[in-house]
Amino acid sequence: MVQNFTLARREAVKALLADRKDLLVVTGLGSASYDVFDAGEHPGNFYLWGAMGGAGMVGLGLALAQPKRPVAVITGDGEQLMGIGSLLTIATKIPGNLTIVILDNGHFGETGMQVSHSGLGAQLDVIATGAGFRSVTEITDIKGIHDYRPTLQRIDQGPRLARIRIATGHVDRALPPRDGVYLKNRFRENLGFAVT
Amino acid sequence: MDDIAVRNDAKAGQDWPLQIYQTLKANGVSQISYVPDAGHSRLIELSHGDAAIQTTVLTTEEEGVALSAGAWLGGDRAVLLMQSSGVGNCVNMFSLAASCRLPFLTLVTMRGEWAEFNPWQIPMGKATRQAFEIMGVTVFRLDRPEDAEEVISAACSLAFESDQQIAVLISQRMLGRKKWTETK
Image (cartoon, rainbow over all chains, first blue to last red; front, side):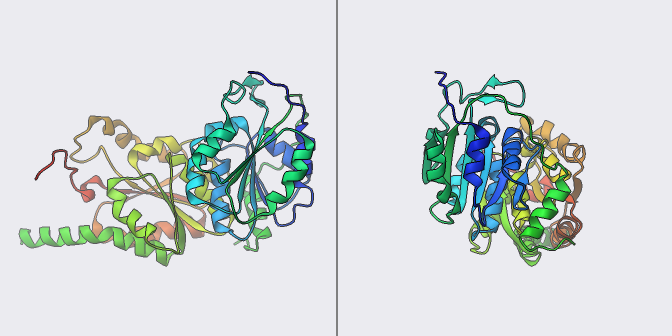
């Protein structure tokens, strides 16, 4: 069942977020947060440092509140697995502007590279299709990333899910700010909400 | 005298979900998520019937905690409806609201506290308040239908204006007894 994927996660996320325009990004805790931060700090990024399993639902609440802005949740397979039911919840709302990006290396990277359910054979793309996602894409190389990038700008025809099969190799951590109040205020100010 | 009091109580009892709905509307709530509960059924119906409210059915309660966080980041006010049995599911996710000092409001219908038929509801019912309080959520009680507007309004102010995490526990006594046998 173990397959070898070679796509480097940092390179993939950097390419995905190049020229991001109005895109708002929520990240799942662990490596996905580090990857997005490493791709370029932005006030439209909201990094989770906890709340495992909640990234997709934070993205849904945001997407429903900001239907004219494209929203991407960038998370790992382990984080999404903990909130796997949220894929069903997201699909029921048909948020046209929401894309879930799963950086899938088949492992729990932050905790010692234990093999995840994805690594043991669970097909997150099939699960998303079964949940009712309107568009599901599997990406295994950098060309696939470049081809998918414009899709993140869409505010209709979602929800979408992209399963990006990345390599398992070690990458040094890149640590984004972890003060939640700062991240919240920065994110809301960027959307035009004054700090009270 | 008793007869009148009973009838008044029954009338007020029918109105409280509508009063909650109207109070949430008056306080600018535009997203409601829920795990279904009989005690919340009328409020859920009202929410689904309102095109100005995004109503989301959840697979488990902690999804609603994260949904409320995202809603606030995007400028919306959200409320989570659940039954007391779901509060324990949310405990770790409450750290999101606490760490980011996010407004959070949940309305919880109580089981396991008044004329309960199902013993499996008792443990979580007894622990509901503590499960909130260990994570820093402030707990209010709504025990009388006539207090609905005042309690919900105060809870909205504390949550959305003072960035607090608030749970309102709706008394099982107020919800009435669940019927366990069909009568025809």
